Figure 1 (cartoon, helix red, strand yellow):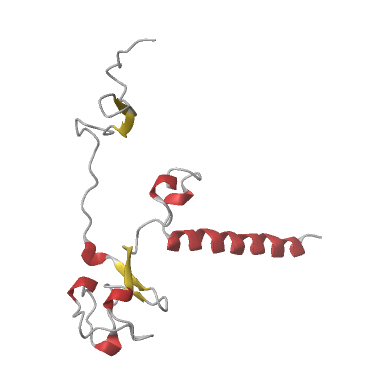
Figure 2 (spheres, one colour):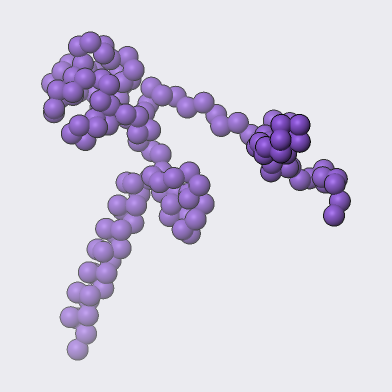
Length: 145
């Protein structure tokens, strides 16, 4: 066995002999060559109330509370804003991301024949469009003699 590490391999763990053989994790990319994710614009993110499931969408606003469309959640007054359904405060809301974000875990988006990259709305069109097409084909069987 060779004690050398090839240039294209990164060590998974480093053993510290002076500290009694403890294993510590080495940085995965010490040179910083891994691409950094672009910062997202949080002003377009939707927020969901954890108490009742209400979703605040900045593109829609809340008409009955006189919150204009385009008002980001983070610009709402945390002392005055309450969930319009259950009256929970701002702390009960969690960020669920932008409207056009694909659903699911990031590591799973490359699987599933590209279907995992579809937004929930696109998945609905695909599913219910397939149902409508199947029903149309089934009904067309009645025209056969």
